[in-house]
Figure 1 (cartoon, helix red, strand yellow):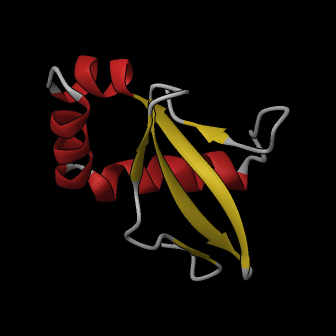
Figure 2 (cartoon, one colour):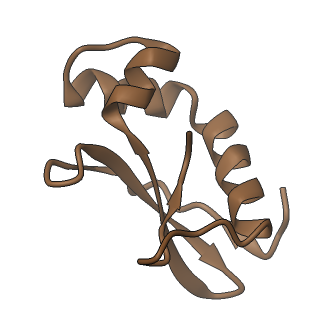
Figure 3 (tube, rainbow, N blue to C red):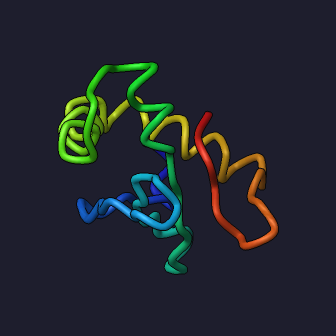
Length: 85
């Protein structure tokens, strides 16, 4: 893992975006990463936000690696968020 990018364990369900949002610290600055509940369900299973959060926690390392790649490629959206697909 790139030492300049760190992922605190503080993911949360965002009902407005229907996604799990989680922070990353990039050279000391916080950015937001996210993956939709529907995407978690299709990749790992689950039917509810609670189950999707549980799946996120099980697959945290892989998802953080994907988020790290998005950050390194500067692949953020108009709001500065990094969405995993």
